[in-house]
Length: 214
Image (cartoon, rainbow, N blue to C red; front, side, top):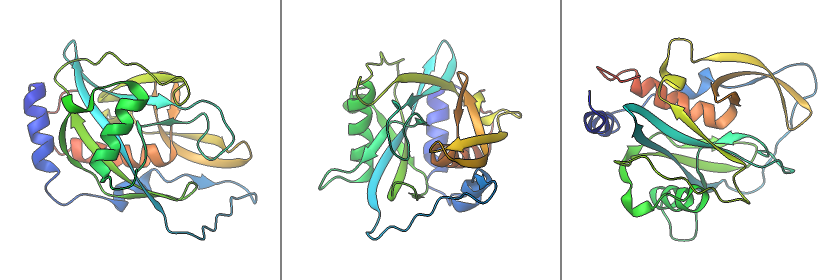
């Protein structure tokens, strides 16, 4: 399967029913012990979008992830997909493309949108996030925003679709909550939580495609 054929196959698959919460729940971290986060939001979730940007590098299909700088808050120091909150008047696709350009420097006008995964509620930060799948026909030259991105990770599809891709270990969330977390590993970084749950839906979708390149 060529990269172009893969993108067309993904586009077609994303028009069909998606696994959604069933795929998300497989990667839901489980609290350990009695110290557990208590979250009670008093406002509706804010809309946001993230982007899975596929590209080919020497015959290997990849997509970028970003490691956030360490900062106080729910997601400091974590690995995530490029993305963020919607600006007024934006839909999820516009948000994901704009945030990708701002955070890692990929020209949004050169990205082909293939479709969307299921909406995902990120409880700690109170966002309703739509994962957008896109592709670009060259290997991008990434330019990370120094304030929002500590480093860029280039993940292969094998990192999420391989037979041994799903791992599990104890992590410390927000510096104080012990959690047993299913996760992926990319470039020696742990990808867990909301990002892993969204990527697992993509994993399920990908593994339903015939002739998937690893």
